[in-house]
Length: 241
Image (cartoon, rainbow, N blue to C red; front, side, top):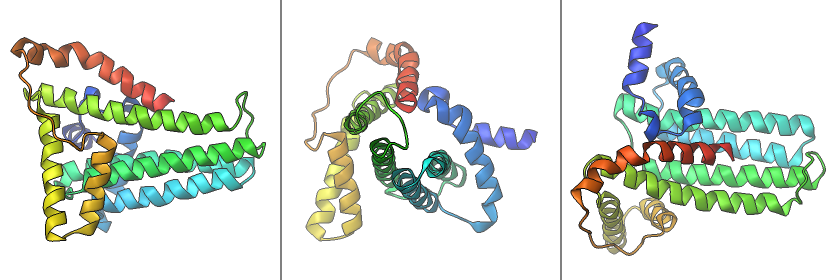
């Protein structure tokens, strides 16, 4: 048991780089799922696509079923959260992440969130779930969460790059993938890769490259210290709502 705990901690990111509910609940469960399924030799993308299937089925159950099916759909969404933690954890453990793994994970998250809010909307509209708000508010909440996720992703990336003493890391990352997209497009290669990269650039909202900026070294040194709590709180709010 001690060996397992040590291995888990070795491959888990610190709390300020994680989302709190994942860190304390879903990530530990995901680790044991990986240990149980180890003989199957699954890849991170296998878990991503399995999570997508589970999330779509959960949303469908919430949208079409009676209260029991809505509860089953909610349980399915929790299972998706576990599977969503499996891909990144497995990539770190086996060092076998794919080139577009981050983009696949992003698209899966957005797709399942869409299914969840549509399912909840339908359940409220059909009277299976009660709500003090009209059903369309759920759709607005989903759109607001999508905007929040985009801002959180941007600020988290910046937070991590500042921690690596590279304040322009996000702009460099965007520039790298924009260049890769244009290269693949000009060579007419990897149509799926182009779709994934384009989706990432649209989600980031920064298709045009930014020029590097000079940052006061004192800000670089203190940025992560000052923002450690707020980035964790922001992640918690994202998961809570």
